[in-house]
Length: 112
Image 1 (tube, one colour):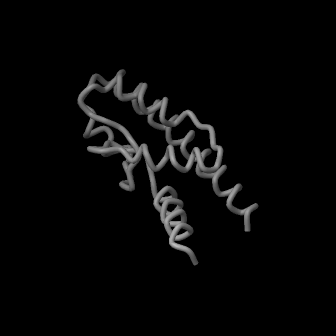
Image 2 (cartoon, helix red, strand yellow):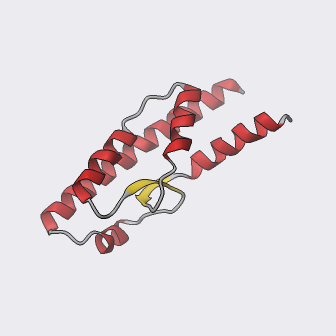
Image 3 (tube, one colour):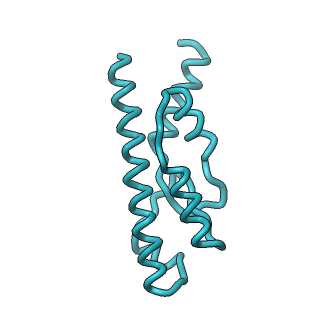
């Protein structure tokens, strides 16, 4: 197997492990690379940017860490109403990101 194929396979494996969470540094570049290579269209990145504007001090992004709803409550110190709005946006982003992962898997299964 060529080194290029190994490199691409590593990107796909890393992409599969990604979740949405509170991050120091988001793996946006990997997501953009996969979207471009496979012609995927998704709103996840836009939704994350919208959410980050609401938060200000915490930053959401793509990470291999899993963020549970209970931890989200601890991490976000805002009014209950605003925290609930952020949680709803968080679940919307997760749903959108799951769609892009599913779309990638469909493309990969057709390539085999």
